[in-house]
Length: 149
Image 1 (tube, helix red, strand yellow):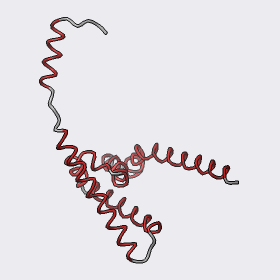
Image 2 (cartoon, helix red, strand yellow):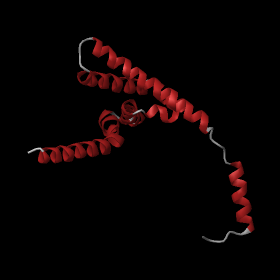
Image 3 (cartoon, one colour):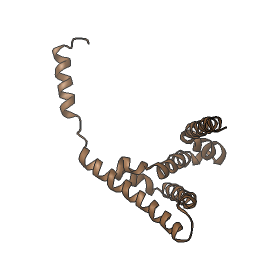
Image 4 (cartoon, rainbow, N blue to C red):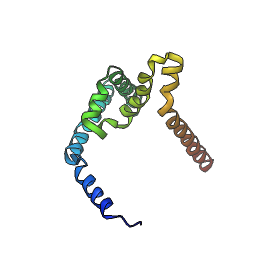
């Protein structure tokens, strides 16, 4: 580790004292509350489908579709970003956060047109996730198939 001069040490101390301290406890509480609310909404939707005669396994698909729609819709009208500023990590609950990550780049580049803007940028984040997910699922499926022959 290089030896710092007195001026460098003084500057490092000065910068450390001026650096804003994030409100960690508040951020954790807000992430917990908002993430819990999003998950509760998902559970309410799942329970609705189960009460209509579907099994929990069958109700998972429609629930996922509705949660993705809600995340995409709220991103499209600008509400999800406000939730994200308020809730931090609580807003990246997997399914709605994934929908937000797909729609956000598309919304950002909509002025470039539907083909080169929205369609091309929509998969900036989703593309690698989809490739990894499909590749992993294929590999696991192949291993499962070979082990159960």
